[in-house]
Figure (tube, rainbow, N blue to C red):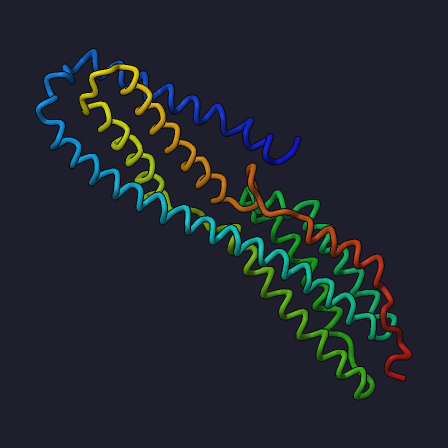
Length: 269
């Protein structure tokens, strides 16, 4: 199933249910309250709804902007980490065969562990699995640390290896930080409470034709539900219908196979 079909499949019931619930709430309100008697207060209620609706619209826009920005940051960290993996794997080809194999095999194991285990662990905040994957990268550092360059050429390559490893470790930390960040609970409560207040306020507005009132209420409820669904989906960049793609890591894995020995020991002969 393509991404847009999957999103449509999951989003449609949410929007439809929210619209239906909004209309049911309108029916119940009209049974309990004589909305027609409030027609004389329509102007005051309209000003109130305009104020509340404007504040809530600004809040929604702000949260969407924040979660979208964080999603793009997470995607950027993934792309850059994959590039750093390829660079380190390629530069390590210039080292002696023993350390070269240890470093490249360690990078391969680390990348395979990200794809197989850590990706789903980030979505679930499974710190134990994330820690185990991180230990694979630590073993790469041990292989780098034990290596002793024998001449100036190897020293130059070794310096590049250390620099690229540090870049890789920093990008891993940034990726994991972006995976752990979530909208605070107080903000979530404000978002959902605001939705109830705005939709509930529509019930008090007197609109003579029932079908017009129901259409406006259902459309507003569905639109707000759509935005809240988008916020909830983007809030976890490694889970849900709209998530960061693994493609960068898969390309890096294929690059490992193509470029295992771009340099050889003779490079420093």
